[in-house]
Image 1: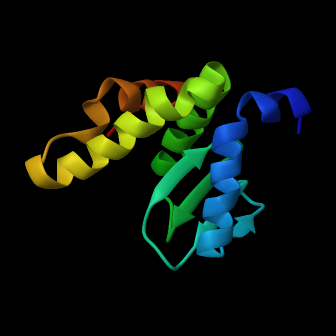
Image 2: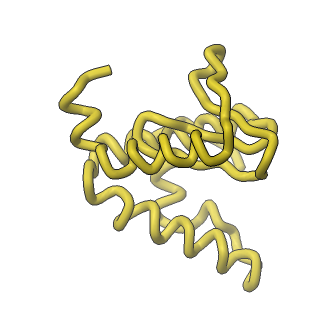
Length: 117
């Protein structure tokens, strides 16, 4: 792990470590993600991709796309991507729309190599 890259993404890395600790997630070395059975979710926070339950290949690719966004945006990631993504996730449960058509989610799909939805 490059220290400058870690510092560039420090807010999301610290939040990722907090989520791992809170959910008691364990590291899956096969695909370098963290998993927990306590909750059902998927999130990319800096160097950490954390899933509650089983993650499909598409989900892993999508979260890798968010990881690349984090590397591009650094400290701005949580404001530019994280907050709109979280709000969009909540709103789609009420208004039922295609979550992955939102610009920040479509960008994550492109960066992660997701070709079909």
